[in-house]
Length: 300
Image 1: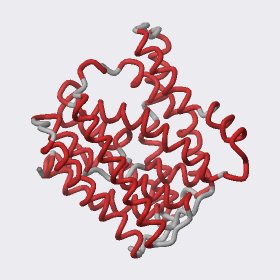
Image 2: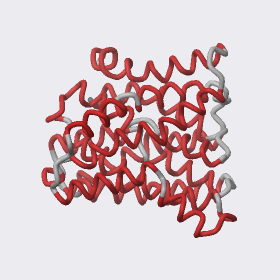
Image 3: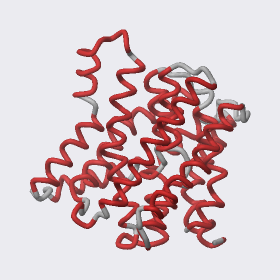
C-alpha cells in the first residue's frame, strides 16, 4: 500500500499541491490560473476526451456494472442536491455544483492516470469505461444543467447556442459518432489530440491548486457534509449496489476504487466559469483530495 501511495498516487497529487503552494506564495495569481483553467477546459480537455470516446472499446464494457454505477450517481446526486438546497439553503446553481462534487469523481484527471500506473492499460479497462462514461454522458448532463441553472435569465435559446458550441460537448459528440460508425481516426489527428491532451491533467490540477490556495479551507458544516457524502456514502452506495448486482472481480474492485476518489475538479471549474459561489465547493475538492490519499492506496 505504501509503495502505491508514494510511487503512483502522490506524484499525481503533487501537481495539485505544487499549484497550491505557489499560489499561496503569490508566485502565480488567481487571474493567471483562471486563464490556464479556461484554456484547459475549452482546448486541452476536448483534445483529451475526443480520442478517448472515439476509440474506447465499448463492446468490452460490463454494461451491468456501468448501469449500477450510473444509478448510484443519480441517487447520490439527488440526495446531495436536496441536502444542499433544503438543509444548507444554498442557491440552485451552487447546490448543483456541490451535488456534482459528490458523484463526479476526478476520474479523468486523477484516477485514470493512477490506475494506468498501477495496473497498466489492459487491467485498467473498468476505469477507462468509467472515465468514458463520466467524460461523455455524465459530464455532458452537468454542463447542460450548469448552463441552464447558472444563466436562467439568458433564456433557452441563448443557453442552447452555448451548449451547441461547447468544445467539450462537441468533442464528445464527434468521438461518439466515430466510435459508433467504426471509422478510423487519421493518424495526424490522433497525434495532435494526444499531444494536446497530455497537458490537460497537469495544467488543470496545477491551475486548480493555485485558485484553491486563495480559498478558505475551513471545514464548515456544508463542507463537512458534502465531503462525508463523497468519501463515505457514495463509495459505500456503489459497493453495495455492485455486490447486490452480482458484479465481481476487477470491475467491482476498480469501480469501488474510482467511487472512493476525490471530488472532480470540473465541479469547481464549471462554478468558476459560470460565476457561481465557490467558497464551499473549493474546500470540498481540497479536503476530499487529501483525505482520499490513504483510502485510494488501501483500495488499490
